[in-house]
Image (cartoon, rainbow, N blue to C red; front, side, top):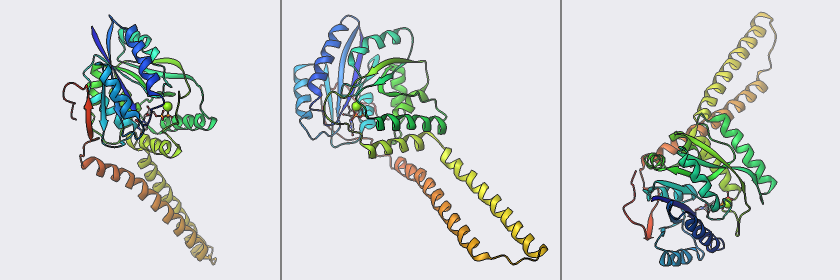
Length: 317
Ligand code: UDP
Ligand code: MG
């Protein structure tokens, strides 16, 4: 029988965990004979009762494992840890808040058996999201589409099924700044969208407030695109042409037409504008340098405090 590991990042999800575990039990039962379903929870430094609930779940079920982090490392890192600890034939990634129904996994497995290496959940609709969240999500995908060359599918979350070889490829990508939705398409192989209706969060609050969403969008842009760097050169060239033209015009007015050109206003305006632009471009460059700095430190992506029911050693990129 083939093995299916379901990776679930968990950050303060005490309200969702009991229902999630029960529903995953049902999915496991429905797959008997086809796939041996195991669950790998990654407890991303939860401060509520999640740790306790996961401990009980691991005690009662040999097919449930948990990796406990020493602190909160973030959603993408938590998913990464799960992927590092699996050697299953197929790996599913699922949020803990039941927005992505685990019952869809068997149907998604059918796609894998048809020969797809990546099956990604694509939201036909999203329930229980504010218009603001919908709008920002849309804007996010438009922006990503414009600035990146990797084809990142729109309206996807982090609800994926990938085969072993995709998982191995992801394990070989050691970058600190991780945007998994972009990394999976980068790996390649045949991918198939799986349309579904996204439920509202089962309980609790979103762990992605606006601040984190903004950060996430920046992560996506700077990790997957060099367009901001190109923008700076294009603007720079534009400004140079503009300045050259302006100088020529002033020279003409002064020497040929013999006019008095009031220079002060113009000079102040130009210096302010140039100063602003230089700061902006420095900022953009600094983003990349900051990232290089983070990468060259070569710190581990996460620190594990302890594991439960985890067999084998993790892959270390
Ligand atoms: N999560 C995590 N670490 C974090 C934030 C979130 O592991 O720092 C988990 C969270 O428990 C959930 C998933 O990532 O399983 C997605 O988070 P959430 O549902 O809050 O995001 P949203 O669906 O609102 O974008
Ligand atoms: Mg959610």
